[in-house]
Amino acid sequence: MASARADPSDSSDASASQPCGEHRRQPAGRREHPVRRLPVGPPSSVFFQARAAILDNDDPVIVGLLANGQLRSITGHGELDNARGCFLRITPTRGINTYGLGMSLRRLLRDPLNAGGSIELPV
Image 1 (cartoon, helix red, strand yellow):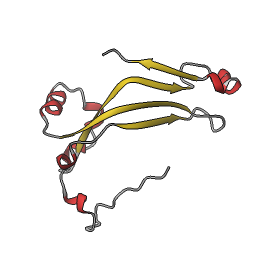
Image 2: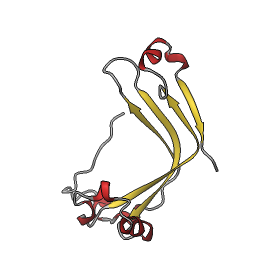
Image 3: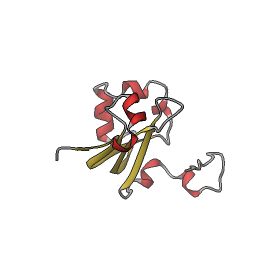
Image 4: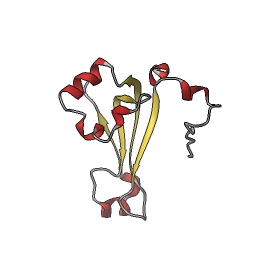
């Protein structure tokens, strides 16, 4: 699955001139995160549905986390200096499905059909 990324210098993209908060409400979506441990065999994966919210850099939640130093590891490279910057808060639904996680690579390669698992998050 290919994804396209807009060129910020392209003035034909109408959304490029809008600040992050203009795209605040997004419907629920499905996301897959493959994790390849070796160049052969199936990748381990995490699948989940979630709600996403776009938060501006000056959102009270973000300001509080910054003040407590909880975002230091992801904001120490000038990310907050970008006027169009924002944060994405992802809240998964109750169920998370996995493939190949929590098992040895040998077992995954020998028994790929039984590598699936699921996790129920507390409410």
